[in-house]
Length: 503
Image (cartoon, rainbow, N blue to C red):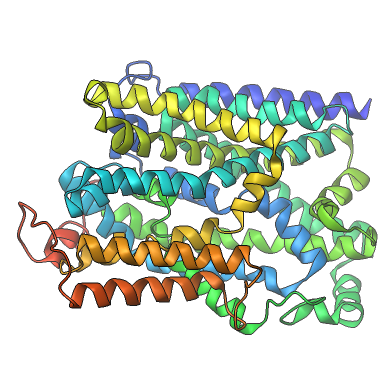
């Protein structure tokens, strides 16, 4: 009976999700329009839609599963998520409007477009698309896996993991192919309403239900879980102060050029929308404390979880303490926290390939054909992640170890290249090669952290040093753009003054 109730609630909300995503393009030609409308919402999303969309990327299935699992296993180190997101939003206050202005001026819709335009070499944009895809595919697989675990758990085992994986792929693909970024933004509204509501309820209910209130709960944490409250946390995690600071700094810088974040930037109606969004987004981070605290609560209620089972810490409490219909609602919130970011990951991979890789084929040039090609890539990318989830889950899980550290290596080529014209193509590419090679060597060699700091930031430092050295050595020449105004004007023209467009 419990399984039937929870599964019915989940099924009803998944149907609403698909319908809501498809309705996003109503009145816009039934999903028509070019790749700009599909990939960045026609650059017409206001503050609310941009806020829920970008908040959705920060609050993924990791927040329900990994966040609670890290809280259960280690404690304090998991707070790096709150630290880097908050700092990243502050960096985005400046960088977001700059990228928006540059892309709007030149009709660009992705980071690969920016690389192609900046250096004047389409093959470099295509190379960036391939590299970014390698680092993004693991995120799609992780969201599929996360939703699968959630659905299987809330259905009390009635829905198998394999079927849950397929549901995650099917629901996401159903609306993102048709409605693109705008559909993801609409679904984000439903997702955020459920996330905010369920987490406020859980953080109030669980301590009362299991501990009689916050006083007894926190007293037990302080006296029985002391190691969980300081760095490096419980156990031999290696995640001490140096790791915490370096990871927070690297991730805060990386998130502003992450392809999914940039898609949110470029979908904004105005630069002012992005600045307001950067001010409001940190408020959403308060919610990240909830699964972390519930993970600590689970350490008392369901002790002894090991390995991947610790990721189920929060849902062990939910299934045990709540009626079936409430379990279904919490499960829907967690599932949508997988679907929204997964949709944007698939969307940006499709956009990058449609604009930068497949567009190199003459028959696939032109706006309409680029959009069609991008939509096909969305399906292929999602299907590939799904197949690998079934057949070889370890492949993408292993790649996920370097996803963020690897994406960080694009920082000099993209961000430094846009603000400093002296950076040459050879220098940017040399730094990128060194950075990616070093981060792969360190991470796959088991040296992360290295010297107590994140391996990615060590690789990024080497990347930057090589790029600067090659530039000052005079190797290669940067392609001169038609617009020869100083860099600050090119990037900041509209971004650094209030845009009259309404938010």
